[in-house]
Length: 265
Image (cartoon, rainbow, N blue to C red; front, side, top):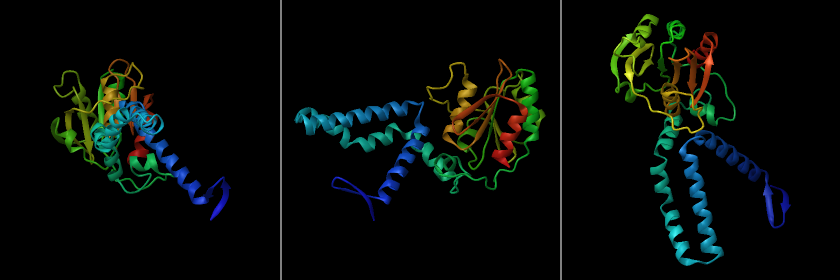
């Protein structure tokens, strides 16, 4: 049903809804891509497309129009290659759970959120005690807690432990005298699966310059999976919490407890 007319256009309520939904999805997609090199590539692709339209259809410059047209013709395949990390992240978050609000994808793209039943019911007290003691003694650490994915690719980069979660074990792993302290530990299903794990480093250019490799690795793993990560700074003892590619710096133990309870209970 037409609701009003603009010249020769008949605008329906569904047309307005269509525009709003597309605008919202574009806004959320920008939220996933901002800060990285991907957004610069998208701008470059848009510039090439505009130049193609100008040279081909406005100025009628056939040679330049053909050259830019070739870029447009293979654009889809090129974008898949260039954005393979972003596409992989998108598919991982999409497939991690089908319920909005329960997965990282749902939290990014759902029009509403609700707190649903958690699948990873782990004991957080040992993690809290370990973080408190590590922070007090300025011992650097990075703790990754898996949610829907078991992070097998990343656990395979480290030394397998398959040990019960305890604050003494976590503290001993990150002790400077331990051969396992360099890297991250990954906790899955209330077990420390592996230590000395290698994590992907975030390419977000908007991150503060003072953030070190631990913080960037914590952000990187939460960009590519729905896991959460805790970082203890070796320099300051500050505790940080990362999820969905964002990080909260210098939080208290009480705030860390609230965040873990929300994410894991």
